[in-house]
Image 1 (cartoon, helix red, strand yellow):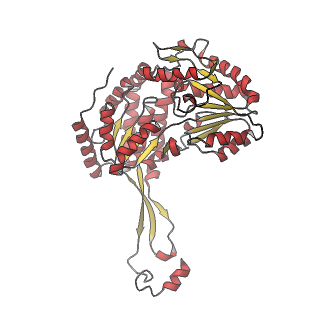
Image 2 (tube, one colour):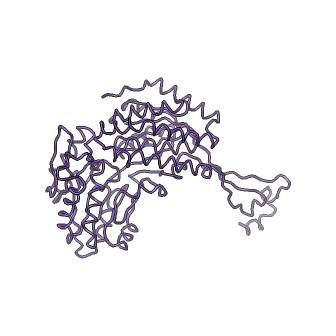
Image 3 (tube, helix red, strand yellow):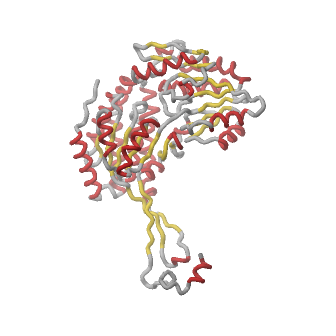
Length: 465
């Protein structure tokens, strides 16, 4: 199925109408925002079956996984915003220095204006609608741009949004790179983009002439570290789950393994047992195992199998875009699988020999010599995990787990450096689409002379400051 491009002149008309609607002040009242959040929840429930079926068609994503990793997370964001939007939007009082005695200081949260949200194909419901919750809660109008690589899902979302909202408030733009390029060249008050670092550079370059602010949720090569003291069966199970979730097409999936040599063979055995436990003896027939999204993705990821020794897995079927979860060893130095974000079910191992140093030293050197990743995972003694956290940088982190930091809505989610800028989830989503405006309210009953020329009280003011 091919998605028809939204005509460019129609996109311009939508953007103009959204800016006009925002200027009318219609979105400013928090009761209006609560009503729209409820509308989104109602629409999500009404279209849940259609979204689930579309996720199966486009990605071979099971109903259970569609609900757990997509729909339930959006519902959780909506509930959190409904409970708290009044408190989030309330102006905050701040202390005022004696130098402006009598004045009162505040932070006012105001919506940025009209936003563009662009989502990728791997979690096409969650990664489009979760940011939308923040935009609604903050009081923005929004253009949504889903991915054309999951056409059934994108069209289903388009129908859902058009049923629930006036396009002057929230609208969906459909299409390919031509549409993206046109959208990025327009002046928004915020662009929220989720995708690869390479595409983010294009977005940033297009947004630069208009000085459009950006939230970039990207990816990168997220290391998974297995120390000598790790609980190997548990580590293997949690790593196998994190790597096979959505067939590894997850921005925070473990991308490569740094492993202590003393536990390497035990881990290889335990990893195979964990995969079979999760997906059965014939994973190709298992309903919870996703396929690669496109032929080009299948070709790229299956090509990595030639860059090392397959220790587990390695089976492929191009007709179904199926790649078995695969553990690679003896990876060729400089191989692409160790340089490029894999975004698939291949996990290369790098053995960390701690001779002449400590395992933590070698791991920290390896990780920090590369771009900052979106996630970092450590398995072993918690104290050593905290040492690794202290000596490295990543968007998020788990000690003795994978993926789960994204599940807690109380934690911010976002990247650092090459893996992104800005963050969202819960209050952070509200803040992402808001401007924190400084306001000082000064008295009129008196007027202190200190600030006025010719600064007669300069010596006293100098002491006070």
